[in-house]
Amino acid sequence: LGVAERPVMLRLLRQVGGRPTVPVRVAALRPRQVVFQGQLRWFEGHRSALCRLKAKGIPRETTVDQIREFFAGYELSESRGPITILLDKNNKPSGEAWVYFRTQAEATRAQKERNRAYIGRRFVELREDF
Image 1 (cartoon, rainbow, N blue to C red):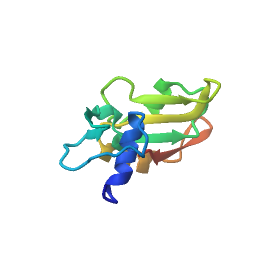
Image 2 (cartoon, one colour):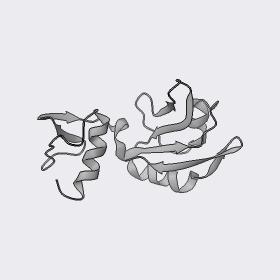
Image 3 (cartoon, rainbow, N blue to C red):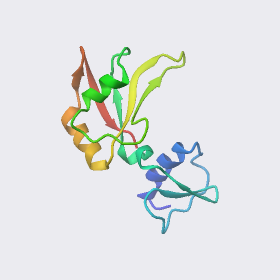
């Protein structure tokens, strides 16, 4: 793999539960395609790591609807589950969530405009989750 391709491939491997040590061929693939353990895999647009932000610092009692309101005015993924609240080891909300956007440009715009904005009394830090 080339230097520029390796980080992208590691992200895609994590999405399918792969290990970074698995040899992966990337050349001549269409967007959202990857060869994983010798098989061609497709990635749905709403699950593309390139369109995902990780929101940190969310109050633990925050609901998916409240997070959706926080991102009102941005194009979230139209597929099911554009927001995933992450759980800790005790299956309680961890204060972090993944938010899937329709495009990378929309995710970048949301990050620039909404980073460190408040939900309740806490500010939310938005990071690219590649």
